[in-house]
Image (cartoon, rainbow, N blue to C red; front, side, top):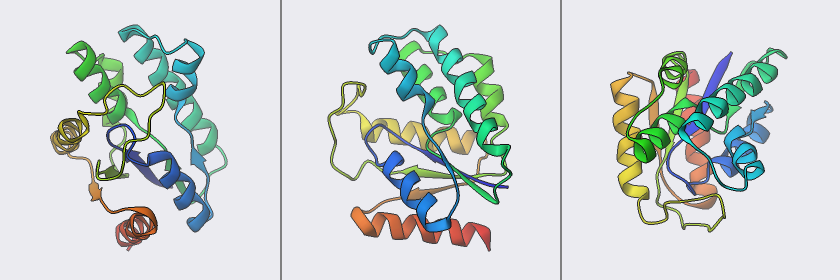
Length: 170
């Protein structure tokens, strides 16, 4: 099963892109568990909640994997939790690190913050997206995960993502 993880700072189009790739390739996409969890907590969370979010995301991923699709698009992965934890708490739980290691063998599409910020009550860093983007890229390199950077706007962005996936598959 080919897995495509979408990663990067907030408001870089990951969810929209997940839906577009899913429609184009006729495969399922796994939503971001953190969005639901943090909303249920009224926007408040602790470092311990990140472990719960990690487990919840992995459980959602497994539920979609059970259908054994040829391709699975994941709106997020453990890289998001890693950067989030490191940035907010200056440490990362070993559970998140171990889960990130298991994402080898997948394509990680790192979404550039070159699209407009969209306000959302669950988003926290409108002015730090470039700095966070660099942290994501460093993390993907550190763990030697296959990744490609996605830039552009609108349909150009979606077309570029489709090309990245097709190139990765060939």
